[in-house]
Length: 202
Image (cartoon, rainbow, N blue to C red; front, side, top):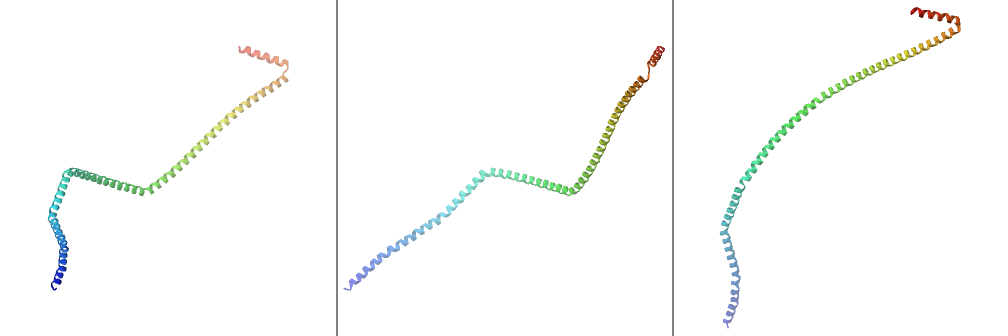
C-alpha cells in the first residue's frame, strides 16, 4: 500500500518533468537560432561593407572619368564668365563713379550757370526791347515821312488845281470884261496889230 503513493508521486512528477522539457526546448532553440543569425550577420557585414565601398569607388571613378572633361570645360567657361562679369562690373562701377563725379560737378556748377543764364536772359530782353523800340521809332519816322510826302503831293495837286481853276476864272473874267469893254473898232485894231506882228515875224 505504501508503494502506490510513490508511484502516484512519480506519476505526478513524470508529467511535470515531461511537461518541463518541451517548455525549455523552444527557448533554447530560439536562442540558438538568434545566436546563429547574429553570428551570420556579424560574419557577412565586413564583406558587404567592402562591396559597398568598392561599388561606390567604381561609381565615383566612372563619374570622374566621364564627367571630368565636361566639368572642367564648364568650370573653365564659368571662370571665364565670372572674370568677364567681374571686369564688366568693375568697368560699370568706374563708369558709374565717373558719371556721379560729373553729375556732382555739374550740380556744383548749376547755381553759377543759372545766374549766368539769368543775366544773359536779362541782357537779351533789354537788347530785344531796345531793338523793338528802335524798330518802332524807325517805322514811326518812315510812316511820318510817307504821310508828309503824301500830304505834300496832295497839296501840290490841290495848289495846281487851284491855280488852274484860278487861271481859268481869271481868263473867263478877263474875257467877260474884254467883251464888255472892247468895241468893234477895238477888236479891228487888235486884229490889225496882230496881223502886222505876224507879217513882221515872217
